[in-house]
Length: 193
Image (cartoon, rainbow, N blue to C red; front, side, top):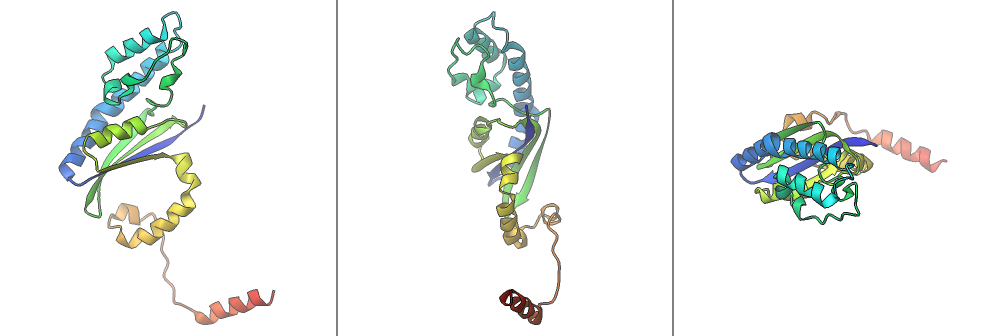
């Protein structure tokens, strides 16, 4: 079907709140999303039970649907395979949650591996915002890579401001003396073409 890595970054003003939200994500939200996703996959094709009833089973069994506000979605019995939940619970089997301090702010960074590449983490992002984040953004590897050239240019611009050596060490910088003679020589070569 196609999988890629998904990323969510939440910005907090307070380190204690950031660490608490990171723990909630790591220990409850992400594992519960995974359990609910697996259960949904198991019951979604059991068309002997009407879709609304299967949805009711999921809602009673998993509070995570309430926290993600997926319990408010409309389920139509004509949607026999419950496609209305597609992508909204998608979370890989493995993830990491880190707290970083950058520019005096605290970031909670979530990376989940091998997520369905059409997943939509909007509901997860809104939940993290509700838990106290000032700003929450998410993307996936495919979308990120398609804009990598622009992002790399921005990273170079911001590199001198980044204090975290783990981030700074992925950018290779060279040192060399300025040579105006060489630049003029190359300009001349272009003009003679």
